[in-house]
Length: 415
Image (spheres, helix red, strand yellow):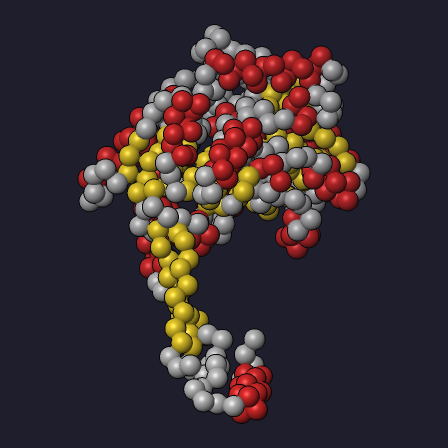
């Protein structure tokens, strides 16, 4: 996961190096009167962009959201999570070694309630990645300051598996989609919907894979599952599982903290029988926990997948791409991966990636991921006064002139 994270900033840099010049170039448009009028769209930097970055991918989110802002001509101040501040600091030092002027990209550390308000009050735009609750506070403050904000917030991401799926291919990708980075990925899967006709087969395969994941703390490629970010977060994950079990859910594998391995380890956990009156049935757990659900028809699966306040990411699995695309079109989500859990959508830097409903406002990546850091200035030119009355012109002549101009505009299809 660390290697995958370090790939993200170079991918962003590579994409926008090819795209930014065209996006930021002035664009000439027609004016209201052909030939004698025109308008030009000019992109102007916002000024100072404030970025509030999360702890789960601190190197990537601390740098990748800032790179298009810098390319658009802005200065950047990033507030990283205190647990992971060294990652963006190191990244900025690399950018400065590459020639970025010192001071153009700065870091401010501190607790969110202490530092966040001051950052927002002195920024011209805000980019935030984190929880929906915090996103509401940031969006409200940005609104009071009349500045724009892009917010990528929480998710309760579903996966729909159709009845023609290849089980061997699916189980590996699904395992990563649930347990990658110990479930601490904004787009990771927390709900899996399996067809009734193959439920037992698919459940058995997934539970078997989850139960065999190796856990450990090491600086090598051995362990498949690492630690959660903190003991406090481990307690949050455990409380979601305990609440589900107390209300009738079944643990198919896992379900326990592992202090014998480390202070914040929690087993890969698969639940069955999770309902919407359970905390983990409706709220993002953000850990190595997933619930399996049975469905009878595809319509039912889509309805269940959409039965959430979130809409960040979704996954559809099928041996028939057209069939999967038809399902994907009906899912309320900013990202939908077909025959993948999450990586394909996020790594597609040419397409915007954002959330709908309570999963956020705006998007990173694509043209939108750079243009959001700019204001559009409209510079309009009228070369000759042709619509107004000429000096000394009588009323009837003016009316005739206007009607002739309108006929010409209609002929030229000017709208």
